[in-house]
Structures are given as structure tokens and as C-alpha cells.
Length: 261
Ligand SMILES: Nc1ncnc2c1ncn2[C@@H]1O[C@H](COP(=O)(O)OP(=O)(O)OP(=O)(O)O)[C@@H](O)[C@H]1O
Image (cartoon, rainbow, N blue to C red; front, side):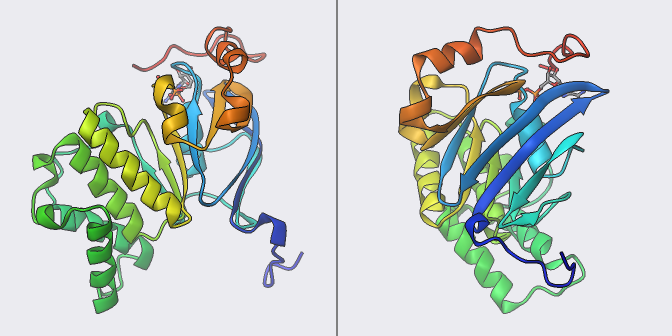
């Protein structure tokens, strides 16, 4: 295939395709030969016990971890390393909320990610930032320091940054954790907005009670892929049991390392 004129497979348009993905830490595999295919406009719960590899999968999708085997393609194009099409929300405790910036400053960073730091901010960039702030209902808070926001508002500020970046795939690590009921409802609505805009949302999640209310599909993970598909088909008693009550597949290298929490 010519490098200059990549041929796009029409069936892969708007799809994220993961094939045979293996990711290891110090040669100990945390993900074993994972494969799945997702489409834009879907919201997907990434489920599995502590240490199942949920964060590892999100980080590897966003290019933060090298992969040992496998391929990731989006829109039929191989994804290698960081891409502006993908936005990543780390676990809350892994974000430095004391970083001195306003909501607006944070959202502008998303825009710069898109432009490159050397480019001048233009009218259209300001508009994109305004739009993102409005979509996440942060208009009244845009001058506030991010350290002075509630947990739910901080999540929205990060989602606004991803919107300004014009990301298509939103990789969210436990976005509902630590939010009270009103903030959860609010985030739920924001995710519905994003899905309506054709974004693909993949979120690790721990509350099995809310899965069917919040998501269209599930990925059940425990070192290896247990099952993947629409909630109604795949989120079954038997699959849940298999995911949470079976010893994780540890691979030929032996037991996985203890979890960092
Ligand atoms: N930086 C690291 N170095 C070595 N091993 C790691 C590292 N990060 C994660 N691991 C191991 O990889 C495996 C998967 O961890 P990961 O954090 O992806 O799980 P998780 O499903 O996100 O867990 P949790 O639900 O607790 O957040 C675990 O066995 C963990 O101990």
C-alpha cells in the first residue's frame, strides 16, 4: 500500500478497531491479546475487578503505554502514539487540580493541542473554546481557578478541554467515581450530549447497578477480554461472574504485580 495515498476501508470508517492487543509492565502482561471493535456515537463501560487492566487499556489506547503485540486503528488508520482524535481523562487522584489555571485556560489547552503550541490563537479558536465551555455549561465558571471547582465541575472542565481539542474518542478513567448524585446526573447528561455528537466514549466504571442506565455497551475485562457487546446481550449474570469471580489470567510469566492502589 502506498504511503502517500492510504486506502481507507469504508467499513472501518468511524470505527475504533483493536486487534490482538497485549500490554506488559516489566514483561508481566496486564492485557492479553485483547480484541474489540467500537463505533462512533456509542458509550461503552469498561468493567472488571481491581487490577483487571482497565486503566492499562485506556492508557495504551491514548499512546501512553507501548504495546507488546497488536494494532489499534481509528477510521481505518493505524494509531501510533498520541493523537488529537483521542482525549484522555485520568483518574481524579492522578490529576494535579492545584495546577494554576482557570477553566478557560484549561479549555484553551485543548485547542493548543489541536493547533500546536507555535500557532497563534485566532478568532475561530476563541469561538471553539466558547462553544466547548457552553456545551459543558461552564459559562458562569470560566474565570474560576480549577482548584476552586467541585469534583463534578472539574470533570466537566476536562470534558470541555477534550471538546475544544475536537477529539472523537473520549477515554475516561472512572469519571463517575467521587461524584454526588446531582453531579453524576449532570455528567450522565453531558456524556449523552457527546454521544449525540457522534463521539465514542469509553469509560472505566465500578458501579454495576448503573451500567445499563449509563452505557450502550460493555467491555468485560480481567487481564483477558471476557466479553464485549451491547449491554442487553453481554452484561449477563454469567459474564459478570466470570469477570469478577475468576482468578485473573496471569499468563506464562506468573502472577501479575500487586495493584498500585
Ligand atoms: N506502572 C505499573 N508498573 C507495574 N505494574 C503495573 C503498573 N500499572 C499497573 N500495573 C499492573 O497491571 C495490572 C492492571 O492494572 P490497571 O491499573 O490497568 O487495572 P485497573 O483495572 O485499572 O484497576 P483499578 O480498578 O484498581 O483501577 C495490575 O496487575 C497492576 O498491578
